[in-house]
Length: 58
Image: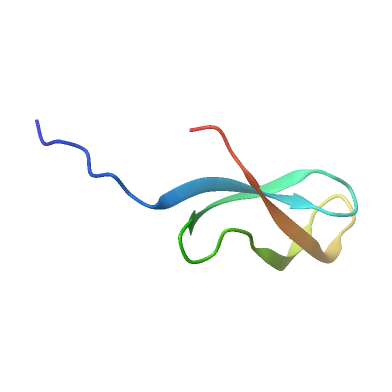
């Protein structure tokens, strides 16, 4: 069995700033982009809102 590589990519959740709901999960490169903010669709509000990254467990 091959050994696992250590990666600088981290699994994060994208949290809606207006509702507080976690709508998306993605990976980011921790060395280049420690935090991200994106305009994504929130299904509860049915419109595009600002989503901020929050570190996720494993």
